[in-house]
Image (cartoon, rainbow, N blue to C red; front, side):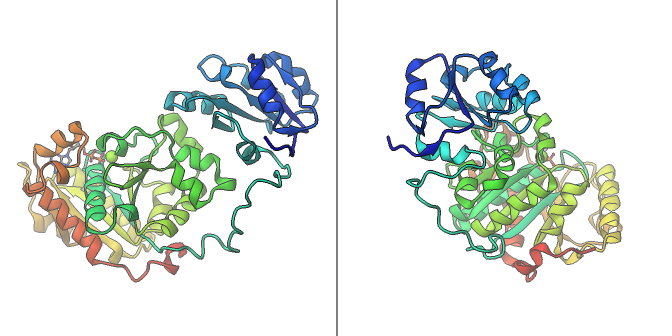
Length: 397
Ligand SMILES: Nc1ncnc2c1ncn2[C@@H]1O[C@H](COP(=O)(O)OP(=O)(O)O)[C@@H](O)[C@H]1O
Ligand SMILES: [Mg+2]
């Protein structure tokens, strides 16, 4: 293994001698080691340490408890964990403990170089291609951002977002479509697509300072169809870790990587949603045929009107259009001052497909409800908004 990494300010902690000696070999000079977290507490408190590398013996719940004491002493301290296998529960535990990163064993110079705080990178590490001066202004692609929203939970946003994305992947290019689960507390895009994300938007937000397209791509979860998903946090508590700024930065990068970015949202007209709308080329506004749904839709649309949101971007999608307690469609259009652009009938196939983890456009492509989703996908495919591109950062207020 080549020498060269600056070992200053680093401590390696593990109870396995082999791990300690192999890791020490990655660094120049002598790097201190310890067997337990209390053993390094003093050095940390004295301000001698800025990176703690924990070995695989810490890769389980309970073992990371002492980390918070270290971070209390030095909040800027970077603690990383080397694990033989990275599982979702381990990532959760690591995030909760405040770790900066979890690195898959074996540890190599390039992997350490990635996490070294304010240190010179090892010269042998292959240099990344020089970043463009304005990485977000010169994307290779110029994807269309489609936000699926509604003013009431359970309206069918997630089933619409996932079915439409599946259709876009089929009709267009599976590698060119990504679903962003922006329902940060209760996102269930992965659930309805039967995906088990290893990494989520939380990982992307934590790596914001060094996020590039390759890293962001590695955070995405791949559906067997090729469609990509940026998964929501695994627990509601992590939603707070995603700032609106982080979300918009991630979105700007995805716009350069994909042709269609379909955003599933929570039914919350908050700062995050407004900021997503601001960057959207098209908005699929889902409304159901019951009174509370129409009332909430009216309130939300009035708010958007007050904010001077360009209504040409909004397309009204009626879900469960054949529901029993139906209001008159013309009445809904009059009340919302928008024409219904597409309709999805109510069908027991939808909850069945959700339980099965397969979009209904895959499990029953000939059904009426699948045709309903197709009519929504047509809206997306047929309307390449002229505002995409430079308009992505324009404020409407
Ligand atoms: N057209 C439909 N027909 C039958 N059931 C539907 C339909 N649309 C949505 N559902 C069901 O309603 C529930 C809520 O849908 P979901 O997409 O999760 O809503 P949201 O994301 O807006 O909260 C799901 O269990 C889904 O199966
Ligand atoms: Mg949902």
